[in-house]
Length: 528
Ligand code: ATP
Image 1 (cartoon, rainbow, N blue to C red):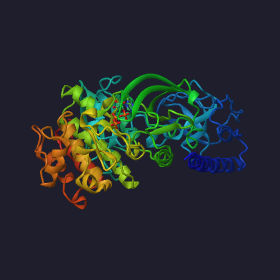
Image 2: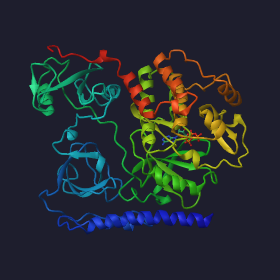
Image 3: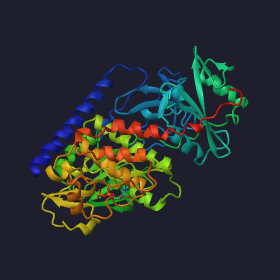
Image 4: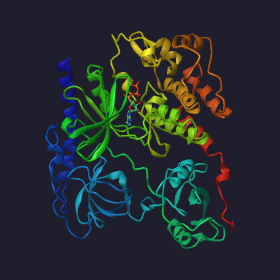
């Protein structure tokens, strides 16, 4: 076993080594303007602390590509560059690790250089660099964002219109409600009212910022970008090399306890809040985990919890991920019970989960334990799928706690494997067969959990009874207050044959379309 692990770690090291040599190769390219220290190679010893390494001075006149920061970024290591949304940056080196080297041209870090997360910036003058442009934002999301703290009357954003791809919408906050206006494009001109065309969106925004001219209110500040994208890894040198020193992680407080261990809020490098999963000693099959983590690390999607790093040298292992302030979706819904979350939010949350799963579907990845307890919630009802693939790496063989009561009847032993019976598709229960289509079955159950604010599925049945009932074709009835169309989605997920169940891609657009049905929220400018 130890040999096995040594070989595996060796493979991971050599993988990192080749990533390092790629990086070094890039550095070998002649580049007179900047000399980049070989930081990556030096980071290979996980117990060596991050060392300060100021970047050498660069010419005062910008020679590289100019970008604008979209979000605030606070340096996490001494080699990072802090910046604020709107700051101008010159890109000195692009790498494909998700981290670039840049120099700040203005703002508090002016003239300093360092690593920046590449997904926090957009080319200067591009649409993406405009603080009011929220490219992939759905109508319901736009409403949540504009109604969140930090915005005021006249706060606005422009987004792609989900009901008509390629079209744009303007969303504006007015008297605590959000109005949406279609932006028409004709002969290279942008219009909100037919009689007034603009040659660019910037000109249109400029015009309506000076006067309301038929809108409910004059455009004031761009909507606050409250949802900051996840970085690839915690820093440039954990992006490829994900084994980090245990000493760099501080455990602060326990967030929860799961079937296989505890989860803590933690702090990495004294700078970055993270979640740290600490499985019970001996509960993880380390070899499977290291294999799985190799793949999990490459999965990046805004609706999936980002795996940042691991500490696997010595027990207990740490699995370090992004932190979600509102905990798991099951408890979130049970706490809310409809006080703040309405039907449109519920469907929108389900659509977010479907979006994360559609990405896994595209990567040919199977979750195996999709349920509301494994979806985490951030601010503004942002939902992200967690624990994908982990069901494979937790040891259950030989476990003797096959008692339903132990964990509320969620998991039950089946041929040496623990299964979340009420979420598992019939082919999983009877033949131990798992596929993306068995995840679709589980998604149907998760949709039931969402609509019922976290009711235990099949409330009248034990796990064993569920197994028997499903064999005879039983399916849960439509929950009260659940629209027929949403129940139809559940029933599609619970089709007997996996082939007859929808794909996650279809589930995503079906649910998104449902969110967008409320066209009454689109306003006409007064003189349209
Ligand atoms: P199971 O072990 O059966 O999958 P679980 O998913 O609830 O159950 P864990 O993944 O160990 O178990 O998580 C325990 C609890 O810790 C979660 O229910 C959640 O409330 C909290 N938690 C887990 N991950 C995070 C995170 N990244 N951010 C914030 N809270 C988290």
